[in-house]
Length: 296
Image (cartoon, rainbow, N blue to C red):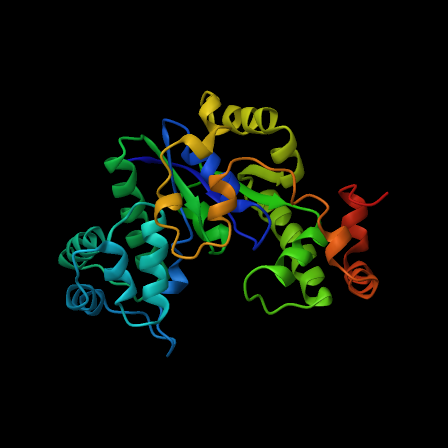
């Protein structure tokens, strides 16, 4: 069983997938992409049954794994299966783990069971690529993660909130306004800092701009915290084996990441946001923007 080493607490359009992909390029680290416990809950608010998911996967079976996932009923679990493929976890692996999970008397009813299942998948992923350390982007209360893995490292990306807003307005189908984005951006940062302080968890905010402009320095510090050696392949992640690039299933950043590091997303807000949008964002987030030197 792999040692859980890294958890990235995700915030949309801040660079979390970039960090996960860099870590995944390390020869000893296996990272999962966005296979979240809330995706194991149906539209009716009830958790799926493991036997139900096994049956659905079996009924949708085709020879092509991409089509197999696309043949699933459109709901949270199809999203879960799509994201599992981004990590290199094919539908048959989901079936195998679900069968074992169910045979041991486990259930997806509680968050603890859903986390057990996800961690079993991440462990299988690490086993298949022969890597001793594992982690992932995980949308869950970090205190739940910390209770399970107090020795792991916890990270959240810090990115200029104006670029976050611009990206959410321009890419994907985010339901956001300048005000709501500013509130979320500010509250998430403070919430993560409070989590680290309250629990004593090891980790930090990772500045997106510094990670892109000086990746060796930032990654060296992260790996030093983890007690692991920095590896140059982490910076050259686009040329490493990355399931995300071959099985993106519509991931918004996969194409850009497959082309390697780029600074073109820094400061894009200057051409993308109107003066009105900037005013609305800054009316909420100015204090945090000043605190992190995004404005002087």
